[in-house]
Image (tube, rainbow, N blue to C red; front, top):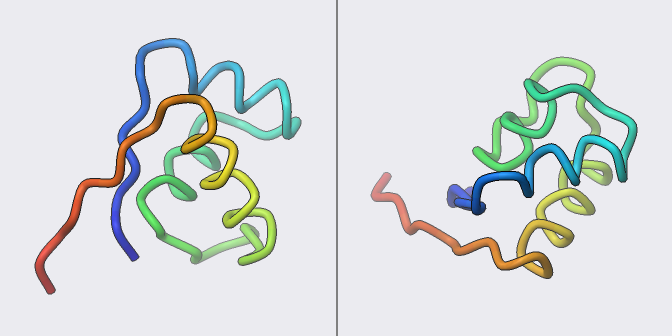
Length: 61
């Protein structure tokens, strides 16, 4: 999964919107679905990040 980069302050907005911690937002934006983060919630966080000006950074695998 590609990484999503957001402007300063958007992460905090997403934390409040979804009621989650900063590490949870960070994992969702990096596409790291390990731990207690469900794929559904991660995809909703990623969609909201893109709607708030986030940009996809393509990564090579």
